[in-house]
Length: 418
Image 1: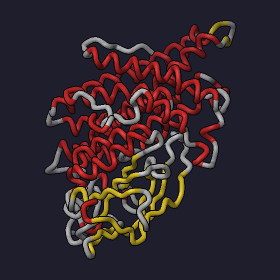
Image 2: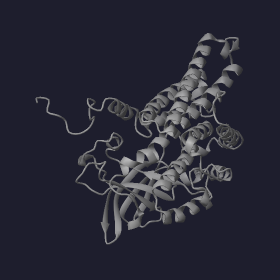
Image 3: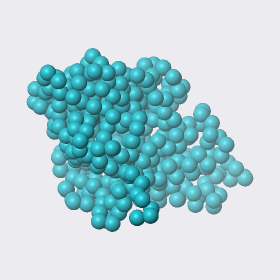
């Protein structure tokens, strides 16, 4: 599927071509040549170190790391737009691997903006020097994840993971699950409650936690339906002790993560998902022009032509929305946050429909693993549940549009008689 490139700066076009070449020359041959690799149930053997090493050589693993440490910094005026371009291409290659890299991009940005200089000087060089070094953002817990995304700002919604300052050290106890890169990461940004007397927005702090910290245990790897090259993990903290200076933001970490992590992250996720849809469209467009049914190629059947056109329209609508939203975020437009949440919902729903159409246009063969088209559907089916569910995101949209009249959508049941 060809891209409309008019109006884009030359550096963005060059970045797109670099990423496209990497996908076509490295990711596609690896994924198609090793179709069984993503189904290995040993996460250590599934781990695509070959791809990480290749991505590292072209600078795609260390995007967001300051140049003085050997990383790749993006032009601040086009940061969101550049991330969108990179993520779309990486998603076209493999959704799980794109997620693996995206965590490094998002968290490197967060660390650059929140971590003290002496800790940046310690950890960024390690990240740059080790091609297998991955980062993880540990927020989600087994209970009440939607409260964190709304968020329902009350003590009853506070995180179960707690951090207490004792004798100059922070002691963490709790559990995090569904953590992207959680099984493989060597450095975590962890959120914990530090003031149980106030609401979640006013009592949640963030911490920098190395994987080898005593008391931190990677309990399991979650076997996901799609995006399987991103090893999703569950983390347990049992009297996990941290130096006092590993506190990043005290009490207001959830309030501040929107600008440093969440908004750029949702641009990345929507673009990655668009790439999945583009891959599904490209594979389907090739198939319907080659496969003959009823005495003619499938594309010459009217029903097939209508479906293929609908897929193309859906993808172009997501791309236009993505481009406009990324430009708004780069320009600091006040409505950018609301647009980003709308984009998340729109991309989730439209790309999943595209991938369903792709499977159906392949007929029964579309459900077969050896055809490969079902992989796009599995990958797209993950996105409505990532970075906040579609329903929770919709609640946030209405809350931002009608703050005085929209519901809280959480909390104790009201007395219907009153």
